[in-house]
Length: 133
Image 1 (tube, one colour):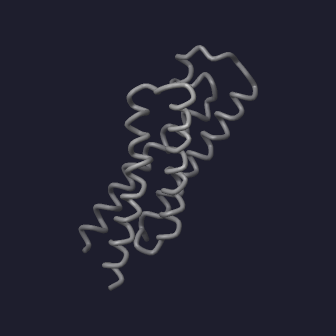
Image 2: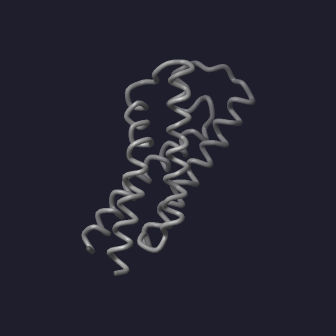
């Protein structure tokens, strides 16, 4: 039971590094290392939105780290955070249907968002039930 909790904590913590790192980078706007290679125009609306969503994404990563020590007690927050990630994956699928496939790393991330989110929610629920039993 403790291993299941520890494994979930470590897995969740490792995945939290994604929004922490990419959120901080995205707060650099259209000139960040990812978008800067695309030679996007210096558009105030696009830059503002990228930085805003980068901040939200960074905040999600911080929230995940905050939740980890009491992961068995934070089921509602855990589900809410993974629900947001799942909805982000739906947004990526909408983008695929509208403009095509992104680079391969983003296809992999989309899989994690769509398939991994429900699996992590199930894992946390089962671990929490076993932990409190």
